[in-house]
Image (tube, rainbow, N blue to C red; front, top):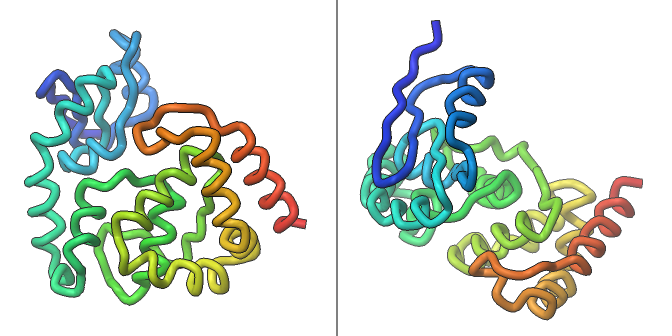
Length: 202
């Protein structure tokens, strides 16, 4: 039997424990207008899911910052992590491709809830690319090895993306100079990404 707890806190809804997709749809569908899921907030709170209005989600994150930091620091291998790495694992914006970079670069870590270094998911759109760029900006130790590791050890698509990384970043900065705040469109960046991916997959 599936066991879970639903908690309303700081204007957001959290689910702790495993929940079927059918039940999740049933619960979120009750009052879904204007609400979105936030995997980063869920991770920070130690929940399986979190959702709410975008404004409430952003306001809630500082409330769970210390909890998230303490959870990462309590891990037995935390002593091998630099401060910036701890902060990103706890409260950084994450997606599959940014996680792939981190765990590929730090493949030496045996982190219980970490991604496997074999996971080489690559960014599919400018939102993914933005999360990868934020990781590299926020965690110098990962940025230092990014080109070497992801350019040679993560498959042909990553190799193509790394080779064209500066061009992609420059295009994105020109199209959407406020991308770090989640504002703007980057259609040309998306087109370039898809061309690079298609060429690498031939």
